[in-house]
Length: 556
Image (cartoon, rainbow, N blue to C red; front, side):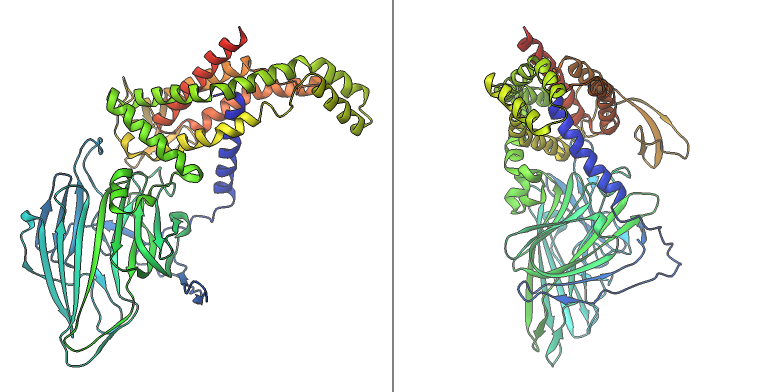
């Protein structure tokens, strides 16, 4: 990766980090369960075109706890996961994904039993009749061992029957919810009826709000994303929804009703001595059940990794955010997986894909390098012109453009190739940042997990987390010695010393500034990337090293 590419990425990341630090809403203090909360309700608004309504209540982030499932439990399993159902709520008590070729690190429960958030597929209605999401259901039929189980409970004049069927393979199951009016009069069900998606927690405390969020596809087919940082308060939005997803960096719970839902409600919670989590529910359209009438709601559920082919087959590939250049990201991910199928190591696959991309971009890099060399040759003439016409900027600009034209040099020649290749580099960055395939994937030696920093060793730092070089692991702060960011810093410094300045330093002051940049830029990159995943740092280190070799070849 040449210097201009690195500088462009540095500027982009600096803007993003600066915005998050200086302009993001301040983090609110945690309220203990026995402390009262101040609440402000924002009036509902209705958009005449979209027929949507939003309502937010500003509260302190509630603290929740992981509690053991209550009631009689039944477990249904397939080759990929174990789903435990409970009579308490007649819903999912836990969803444990087994260690596999996709989930390399360890088995993981992505539907932790938190309280007070309702568990996945719990039904709640705050109107009449009131439906308690924690009510004790009766298991009426089905064999969990065969992948099917059903529950039933009466709430006043409404009878709810829940039936579940887990797919023989993969990470999906089907839910069938029957609402029957067992009374003698019509029964109106208002729009507070909701089906819970449960809660998804950040994988680590260091992740915070970086990847935690809610996604949905509206009834127009548009994908909307709501970051956890925007859900410090409980939020309700009325909009047609085809599917709703709760996700962290590598996993997601997705609900896909057979007919669009009326909206969603969501809020952030904070696990005691743990990371933040996000809980959400689908809002079901209001209805009137006539005496003896039964309404059926069918929902397909995905509970698994953010693996592109699995989510695409489920119909919710949009859960994976490839960024602005998603069309490139999809092909880069496919290429990475193809190379892995050949070599069997994602670290090696990243190196091979980096080499392939370098080869593809070689003509552009070569053109940029030659343009900078030509600009460097013109430096004495440019400096003389600037001195001669320092009091006449217009004349100075005209003479400079005349020199460029005479020598066939385009001043922007070093930048245009960079602009063309930037989408590929950004897409590669996003793929490596979000690929569940790297979760627990080893490379070599001490690098056992490409989704984590490549710490050679770590030292506990007591109660304090050191900025930039510290990290919270299992609730405790550590100082890490990460090797790849240091290697990247070294090779980037070497490349900067080799890169022609492009004729831009026309005065001693500018030359001194360039020397300072040669030292400061690698350090800034080292700080920014120090706690980045090993897979990302491996890509940048290899790409920069290949850039050095390419420059040596072109200098000959």
